[in-house]
Length: 168
Image 1 (cartoon, rainbow, N blue to C red):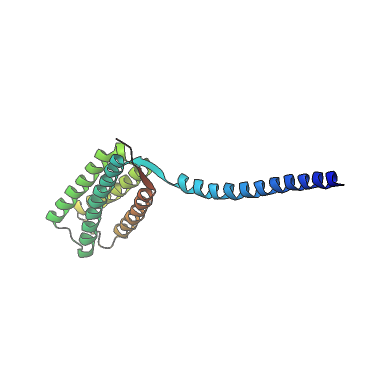
Image 2 (cartoon, rainbow, N blue to C red):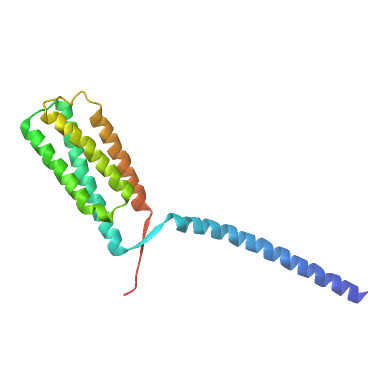
């Protein structure tokens, strides 16, 4: 009977071992899946690339922001002053030049959205040059809202970047 009890004990221990191993494995698999999903959300880049991209998006945001604020100011004043229009033309040129210079280094979808905002700004500037009043236009507000959405996309993209420290 001792052999029978020993055999049964061995079987119970073996089954318990498999059960415990399975539970531990499931726990680790679940934790690993969560960890892996967090890693997959991030994009890992070098410090040099991060700094370069940060500077590009900062510069684009500044140029486009200044252009849109000037358009809002002109629209609110109903301004068709030649000097202000000339300044808007220069600001639009500076914004699109910055975009073209940065094009190879930024995400395609963000490039297209910056480009779309430029095109809309340019249309309104042409209207101003022709003597139309854009003060009553909803387009300036729409452009401002699109710019806000674009900046949120840039913010989201850059927040998902993580720097990998490369050893020297």
